[in-house]
Image (cartoon, rainbow over all chains, first blue to last red; front, side, top):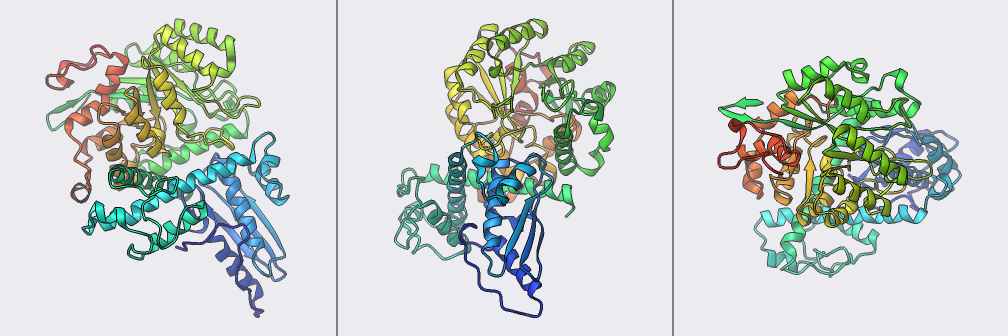
Length: 246
Length: 338
């Protein structure tokens, strides 16, 4: 699973060499670009979740992307973010001249697709709704992702015998390296929270270190958050499989 | 009543529907999409032998429902939670009246809950009074994420919502079921945000707030609120069927609930006809947190007493339902006075 990469907007992707099978190479590059698009709520790539129903680019650089979701009524705010991020990610692939990115089988497909194609933004696509609320929602779920990530990193350390004192004193640089640690660091950076080697491993939503006294409750909330997100992801995968076959 | 290993469990199914999603009642593509969504939940989380044909799922007979709940499904009392959705279904999906008609034909089996929408203003308050007079309401089911005209939803903290809650207090409708779970209609708002429950529960300590679906997919927020507010409860509809498809996750979810809100605040529900109570009850009584999880975390085993409370005694307390002595916990008369 790719980690530590920012979402779609402005993403640079390695140039595609001129091969005999240019279409295949472009398709692979587009697919790889979609790996960086996440479901904001589940904090997993849309590719891993099975949300990419179709991804193809022809030899002339025309990309066709179809996104699909577990249900007809999946929250359109998150759907909009994913379609917009996918559009940005694919159009950033060198060699892609035009991208047709669309959400299928959803009650708000028409509005979302038209809005994304026109690069109109959420508020223009849905009259009377505010753009800012959507970005705040994204940030809110990033904060949850940070909390869940904290559990993923800390739980194994505690299980291996780390004391709460030791945990409270750890920094991102002194914690044992792992994929989960990289992921946590990148989510923190995305939120604008301290993410350097010298910054504390366990921080609260404002970015301050969580002291020894507050640590047990903080970790407990971190665990509940991880359980919740993972349960949701499992539920969504099941519904998607039910809807489209595994 | 369900009996296993010499233990008797009084069963209150806290969330059932008698719905009509037949093509004739579907008003538009949203009506189709809504029931298809329900069917996906049903087919995805039920054991294969419990999956209904799609046609039956659209509209089932009253007799089938009575059989599934009370003859087959061990249920002693079932609580109707109406879902109006009159924008999607010609006669509504399952209204208080539609559910209530079934309840009246089967005395003693059901509790008929009502509903309100604070955006109906003054007229809605009168409607609530009339509904209470007609059905002697002990509870209401609320959908804060439902669209209405230009409105994309409402919050329990809205001024008008406060007036409606005050009306419930005045009329003696103590149980406020709030749907915080699978989407009905939210757009840019986070329709699952449970923060408004926190505030309402503080403002109305006389009312009980039952958060349906335990706030899933926002379990963590719900748990946090549940620890602060003594009058907040969690309904297990949608969460409990995970026990079959994803027992590991269910063990985590129920353990988190037990840790944060405790065994006195969790209510069993099938969400019939999305799931049937028979397999849920049987499987839950047999369910246990896996040994390895008990050793490596502070998750504990779920006791028989906890299961009895969750499956019926807690709801009996909230709804003042009489519980046979043989099903009560030793030394703790349940269902006496809520």
